Figure 1 (tube, one colour):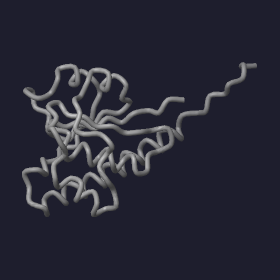
Figure 2 (figure 1 turned 180 degrees about the vertical axis):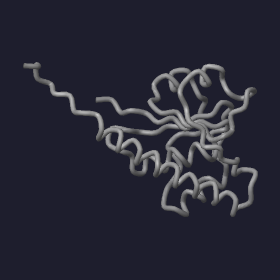
Figure 3 (figure 1 turned 180 degrees about the horizontal axis):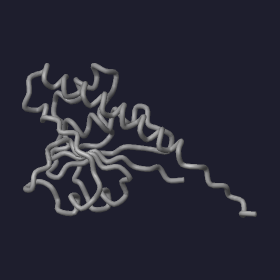
Figure 4 (figure 1 turned 90 degrees about the vertical axis):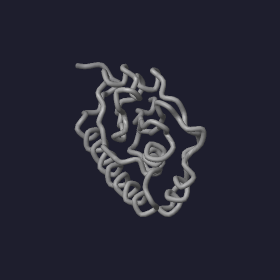
Length: 149
């Protein structure tokens, strides 16, 4: 069975969405995996992102900031924006899909204490999302491979 995808989206894919991806993939619910992308990605992760993840025992995802594609949007079962998509930066197609917005400030514009506060909110949000997905999976009855009688 193919993994179900959580897609974390922000503009630059250099702080919030990368951190959320790393946090989710550190302990994903069975059958789930996260990725992240940006509508206008930076050339590299924000220099503080790796350090802030390192403080909580995590590292950066294995990819550089990457561009959000229609395929990513279509394959994702859950789409989470970070509170950064305005009309100018958000592809119209993304707004037609079901998504949730976490309304986080851009930590790149904050001092280290502010960056940590955003990171710590992400830890709580990702933990809540993980729990939500586990509970939802338990509610779905298993489908038997045998014929109905």
